[in-house]
Structures are given as C-alpha cells and as structure tokens.
Image (cartoon, rainbow, N blue to C red):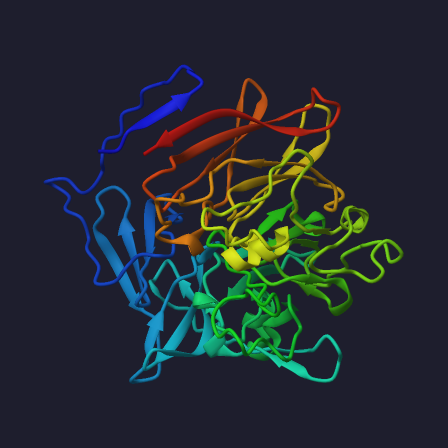
Length: 458
C-alpha cells in the first residue's frame, strides 16, 4: 500500500479526472516497445488536437487526442539488418517534427541521425535530407583530436530550440553515454533548420560543444566516471534549459560526472551558461583561479566564475555521508563522482524574486537543491538537502547510481510568490520520497531556500 502525507497542512482542492481514453467506447492503442521519450501535444491547422507518440523501437505515431485512435504511423529508416532506437524526446517546429535517433547493428550503436517528419502527412519531409551527426574538436593540449564516437554516445536529452537573429530555428541535441561506458564525453550539437533545408546536410551543423576535451580517457575503470576524467555527458531527459528569446536567448547546460579543470577546459558536473553559437567562456578570475585544484578548489575561485556554477556544500550543510561509508575518505566532488551523483541529471529553472533579483534553482542527483545567482553563476546562495540519501546501514539502496532526483523542477505561484516543485525518489525501503515545494526567502538579507510543503510517500 502506498501511504502519502503532506506537511504542513494546506488547503487541498479536489480535482476529478475523466479519461478520454481508454474507455469501453475508445480502447487504448498498444505498442510493442517502451515509450521512453515523452509524447507531445500538437494542434493542426484546423486546431484539432493530436498526440505524437515516439516509441523506443523508432516508431512515430499520431493519435486523435479525443479518442486515442491512431491516425498514422511511421517507422524511422535504417539500413537493412539494423535497428532504430528512439530515446530523446523530439521537438515540434511549426508543423514539422524533428527527431533524433540512433541506429544499432547487433546491439552496438553505429550512427546518430536527425530527420524531419511532416505532421500534416505523417511522412518524411524530403526537403530535409537525413542528417548523420559527426564532429571533431581539438583536445585540451591541442596535440590530438577528440572525435564524436557513435558507439560511445547516447541520445537521451530532449531536443530544444531557439530562433536566432535571422529567424532561423536552431535545434540543440545533447549526448552522454549509456551506463557511462568509457571513453565518452558530453556533446551538444547546434543544427540550423533553415540552412539544412535550403543548402543540405553539409550546412546543417553550425556549432558543437565538447565538455571534456580529453583524448586519453580512463582505462582502469571501463564503466563510470569515478576516476574523474572525461565524462561530462549532456543527458538529462528534460534537455538543456533556454531562457529569453531571440538575441536575448541563453542556454543553461548541466553536465554529468567527471571534473571541472579550468586549465584543461574540462566542464563536467557543472552548470554552464552560453549564447547560441556554443562559444563558452567560464568568466573566472585568472588570479583567483591560478593553480586550480579540481578536488579542492578555492571558494574564492568558484565564486568568481560568471558563467560557470560548480556545486558545493553551503555553510551549515553536513557532509554527504552515504550509508555504507563510501565517501568517508573523499572530498565533496570525489564523493559525487564515486556515487554517480551528477548535477547533469537535472535541468535548472530560473525565477524572479519580489525584489527584482533573478535566481536559478538547480537540483542534483545527490538530493540537494542549489540556489544560484542568475546573473553571476559562481555565487551560490544556498544548498538544501531535499531528499535523504538512498539506503541505510540495514537497508541496501537497490539503485544507488540512480540518485534521488532526475527531473526539471516546475515553477508555479501562490499569491504571487514563486514556488518551485521538485519530485524526489528513493530506491530503498527506509526513506520516504515525493514532492517537495520550495520558496526563496529574503528574510536573512540574502536569498535562502525554504521548504513550504513536502508530500512524502512510503
């Protein structure tokens, strides 16, 4: 039995949901594969609602939103003998669906593709020749090239879009790797839809971001990033965050485990801010960050970085102590890497306070919520542990690598006050989990996080 409690007691308004389907009159549509990418709502030119359903095996379907009846379906193209795998949530641009998927040959990923489906016909839009993603960037020491390797890249993050100054739609696709199999890196592709359509695939990819430009990745540990080299995947299911519009657009990009090393331009387990074009400047003070130590970075250096946030404990926070003493001999950043508690599992949200100040709330897989200055990312105002670490001395965490939060928080309001809602989870039989609602308090003279409601389920 699932038992839920909410504290403190607030007025709860009862809502009744009536299913449109499945019902006796309108049975459900079933699929032969999982639906991992999120379905999308779409209205056609006549304002008729539809639901676009992407399934793991590369099948795209359109359902009538009123009765669930399938209107059309399309199987993503592959070479004979290979399979399509669709994990990343596609994106709708006008009446076109942009889809990122990977092809598998006997279970091994051998390419990552992007194509466009015309939602009015349910067929491929032949104006966009299918695009096979590729990239190569210089290594940190400029002595080698780091090449996008399809077998060690995994398309998981939802596609996102901005419109540039030329009114061209730009699409962003992020990559990490499944099971953190080394060698792997974080990659973000920027694709110009207009130039792709008008000038072909050679003009589609405008810019590429590589988060860990290391040519030599760990060889001692085939899986994971506990050695804190390479990694830095851009993989959160909700995709990168985009604030502003047009020329005011900014990209907020969280990365998975690895390390931040300013000298080597490694930006794993961090939050990066940049403009379309994917040219990143951390904006850190060169004097304060001289001789940067990735395991014991100075607070002054971290706080100086304008466009880079590196998670850390706040004053008054207790150290992270997993129940089986895995981090007793480790610093905070080493513990995050060892436990796979990467920041990049979550997408940030931005909100404006009553005093006009803007802040960012970033959840971590470690169960913490970080409060950051939106204008100067290096300034961390607060960190609040909103979910207990999975497991206890007598109750093994069944999925310790899963952490406690993988989401994008939702921002709502109560009487004009912004509230951030974060869903949490726990893979044990001891700790409760559920929805946590946070507000930002200014009563102490600086922004701090305040818990307003917790809906816990055990």
